[in-house]
Image 1 (tube, rainbow, N blue to C red):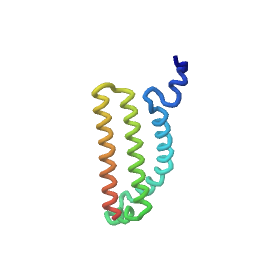
Image 2: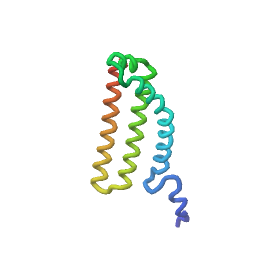
Image 3: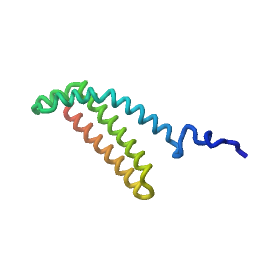
Image 4: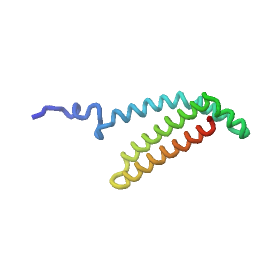
Length: 123
């Protein structure tokens, strides 16, 4: 007979078995995005409204290209994880599976298109 309390059984993982990991992932990625976003907004804002040549010149430099790539990857990973957690909380059955797959495909598709476009500009 196992003498384990309810608290001990639930501690650390949550009901789904990944609650602590998901929570910490979202916290860390949110802090990373909070640091990265002002740099990205400055770079994107300075390129906004410029001519084609000016925009290409801005994103051809290594630092703006790296910051933009990091923003794409971390921003879309944060979106994917947050949307997946929301779907898991509010949907059940086939609809839950369908929307999780859709969100994952959408986020990776946008990420791939963005990184491809950035690579095309930077190289």
